Image 1 (spheres, rainbow over the protein chains, first blue to last red):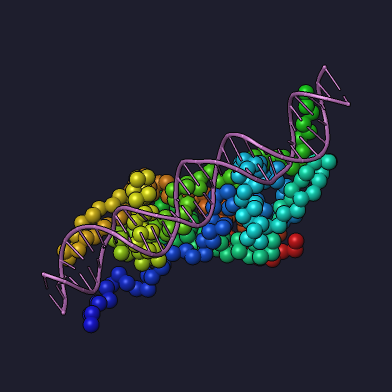
Image 2 (image 1 turned 135 degrees about the vertical axis):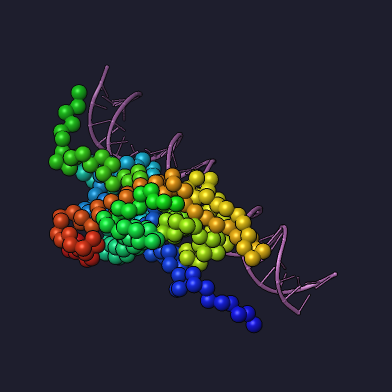
Length: 134
Length: 134
DNA sequence: CTGATTTACTTTGCAGTGCAAAGTGGAATT
DNA sequence: AATTCCACTTTGCACTGCAAAGTAAATCAG
């Protein structure tokens, strides 16, 4: 049998920084933008609004909305306004739930990173992260 | 010429939620894990440490470390310990800088999302995000 | 009325990438 | 000498983000 001495390093660090809450569907720059836009506008936003808010190209936005809709994170209603097609997007209830869980993980990442090992200085969230002695 | 009435909607919202600070090299679950591990352990971590901390497979970690090294975000020193190969990883100065910038953007995302449009309740960072009337 | 332009998307094509399974090389063990 | 174990690396593929091209309907120009 193997002794396998419990090294001082190993104090339940298994997956300490794995962040499984970082949902792949959400953890993508463009989609993160879209969802942040939508969660702050629960009444919904149009395709054109989103395109502007997120600085996305038409094709790009279209693709990401498809992904989010398929995942039931947003719902898309195609209608018309002033005789022009108008796509309105809203975040769904389950989408909101998933997004909030994701955000909680994000917050944890920021908090973990702000901890900076030897706990030199933990003032404002990100204070203390700049050049420290190597 | 076009009148182009300044709609009430448009108050410098261009790219409001674009988050260009979300560096593609960093904004990836596995690499985000690795960097958070490394920034909290400025002295460096071994391949095996990282594998455990981030719950990554060997191949996966190897690949991501290559990407991070090529981007000069981490430096990798291959040595030996007790006659076995040992890879030690450290975050570089510029890597730290880029990562901190990234984290600042992340924090902004969380803050923006916490704002929830009608500013119903902005207490704890993520309080107020749960089911609100649609 | 016809052709051109604009608006609001959708589709296509490809380069890039995350991931796991398989591979490598050297120590230690049998 | 052969096998096992450890610490990685390489390979292969399925997926995906992205932009360029395409589509459809309304509006405008002449």
